[in-house]
Amino acid sequence: MSKKPNPPFSPQGQLNQPLINWLEKAENIANFGVSDFDIKTGQSKWSQGLYRLTGFDPNDPPPSLDAFISWIFAEDHASVKQVFQQVIKDKGPGFIAFRHQETGGPIRYFEGTLEPEKDDKGTVVRIFGTIQEITMQKTIEENLLTNRLQFDQILDNLMEGCQILSHDWRYIYLNKTAARYGRNPVEALIGKRVIEVYPGFEQTPLYDLLNECMTRNIRKSAEIEFIYPNGDKAWFDFRIQPVSEGLFVLSNNITERKQTETLIHESEMRYRGLFDNMSEGFALCRMVFKNGKPEDFLYLDVNDKFSKLTGLKDVRGKLVSEVIPGIKDLDPELFIIYGRVVKTGIPEKFEIFVEALNLWFSISVYTPEKDHFVAIFDVINERKLAEFTLRFERDRFNKIASTVPGVIMSMRKNPEGLFSIPYASPKIADLFGIPKKEL
Image 1 (cartoon, rainbow, N blue to C red):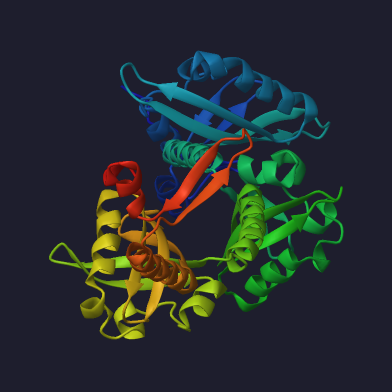
Image 2 (image 1 turned 180 degrees about the vertical axis):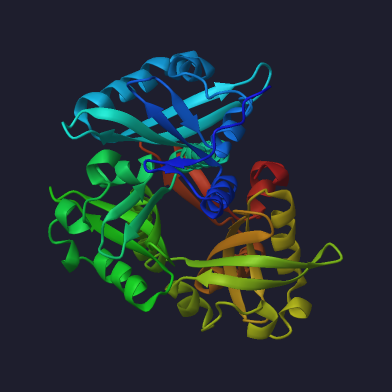
């Protein structure tokens, strides 16, 4: 005849049935069991819940302590035995954690507490224990840990610094990039207040920005120059988001970009001075094509000399057809040349009379990028007038010289003592028998 399982118990003896029912329900809900181990006899009493957790047959007597220890993972034997011995020796409670695995089954995790009972002399005579299965919690913890490690790995590999600041300005989290930006290891910052690490932080623009986000619960972004305790400076792009813990801060070191921008600005100012003080006019334009043909062009930028030479003002952002109505009909060749340079990329230099402005221009044009051209020009009205006058006077002189009976000529002596004849009237050909084409 098989033995009945031991019912739940108490130090005072057997429990009444309502209490037994209550304990069994509690064990089922919380997934735990209890035991009573008599040190003198080596006998144990187990609750129904403990039988259910361990899988021992409830119709058999509770297993001995050694049998129970053999049931758990071999790697956990020593630690469990040590806790039992420590409870007996120190006469205080103990905590055990162990694992179990059936053949081919999953690993199960357990934890428990041991509470000693002493006699009148203070000797431990019994140990009461509670054991609870925590496999589900352990699995969740391991999954959370895995996810956290993966999340940390992702954050640590970001080029941006990531940090979480508490409401009292303590570092709750930093990735490696944020720690590098802060010039301190992560472990030296976690739990520290920002003002401890960076004295005077409350007087910085960064503090004002963070404090505004914290107190008003708003997100903001800004580019701020940060000054380290040793006086070094660095520029950062900050993006700040309020979270339940305080503030989540993303940062990116933009020092190199800022330095480049400064150099570019200085260069632009330097070259702008040269640009504005050129003796020639300058115009950067974008050609507008229609059906593949140049239709108009937009003034993007001009220098001061442009207005002085052309008399045109406030042309930036305007089409030439707005600035000079009718220019395309009056001066189609100008559009043809500009369009050709834009399409071919081959620079050209030419002289042209622009009827719409009644001015002669000498223009050099090239294309800096697709659909754009730069025209550098000078007004050459005076030179053209001088050339016309000289040509007119030469023609008039030749007509006079051709009517004179004799020969008119000029001679010039060079440094070697040789003579040349810069000019001779046509009659010299008849006089000396020189073909006119050789004159």
